[in-house]
Amino acid sequence: MAQHYRIATLPGDGIGPEIMAIAVEVLQVIGQQLDLSFEFKSALIGGAAIDAMGEPLPADTLELCRNSEAVLLAAIGGPQWDNLPAHLRPEQGLLGLRAGLDLFANLRPAKIFPQLIDASSLKRDVVEGVDIMVVRELTGGIYFGQPKGIFETELGKKRGVNTMAYTEVEIERVGRVAFEAARQRRGKLCSVDKANVLEVSQLWRDQITQLAQDYPDVELSHLYVDNAAMQLLRWPKQFDTIVTGNLFGDILSDAAAMLTGSIGMLPSASLGPEGTVGVFEPVHGSAPDIAGADKANPLAQVLSAAMMLRYGLNQPEAAERIEQAVQVVLDRGDRTADIMSPGMNLLGCRAMGEALIQALTETA
Ligand code: IPM
Ligand code: MG
Image (tube, protein in one colour):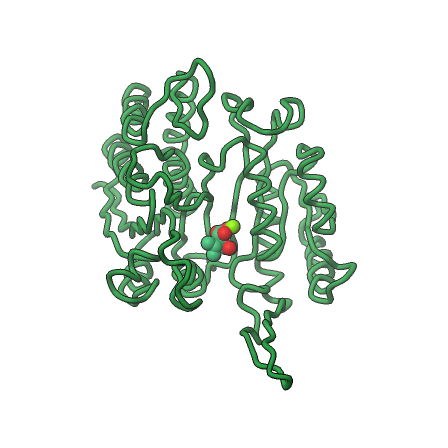
């Protein structure tokens, strides 16, 4: 009997539907090969949901996600929704999903593909061999802290407020995910904060330091976020696993991603408490400028499906086969426009999907 999985697919906006279609096809092929059966149910999120239902995260979408074994998300947002009031913006769909599923740990690997080194804006010797895992806290910090809002002052002038707050429990639970991740990797964890200025960061640092007693095999270090940003560009190979709060993680994970040459290659996993449903999505956005033009790079979406298999469904062999197929197409010189370099074969989104499926079938 084939192992059966219910997967919620949330294509979202922009290039989302195009890259999701490829990931679903790839999963179907891998399913046939390894006797896994996937039942895909699609739902609206982001701008697509705003247009159809008037809200970025319809209750049915959240319900479907809760009742699935895993959620595969593409990307949300676009200029046509940028001027809506804050609670009606596509981003709220994503934030609502994170909060609604309690996805407190966001794993963002930034690993260089040797075939794409020359696509990086940094020198070869700086980026060659880079393999970093950013663990970003995802449901707390300044993204969710109260009070927040734009308030009138006594002088009739407006004042914008957000609050960066973390409880010990919030720090501990993401800290444990990061220590465990470091343990599975090269045993080094760097915690990033702004403890020289922010009280919330002092608590963060104390809590992570205390937690380190439970992980004597992991070497813990601390950096202030400004220095961490600099070190990522200066000598990224010093990093193995990084753990940080929501806002710092948002920024540093984009910087880490770009070391690899293209943000179009990077997947991510957002995980909640043990045994709950995770969300797997590319790090990149919805690229509205190329939406519908068959130019998108589907590889981050496909690699997100691989992360889903590994972290969400405990099917490491299926994950490896997909990752292997990505290596094969890159070795062959197949490239989408974002990772194109002279002498390589320029493919559209669909053709890249076909190349992947061919590679999967050949290596099976
Ligand atoms: C990300 C994005 C989101 C974030 C936006 C779209 C809300 O930048 O996933 O990194 O800020 O978390
Ligand atoms: Mg971001």
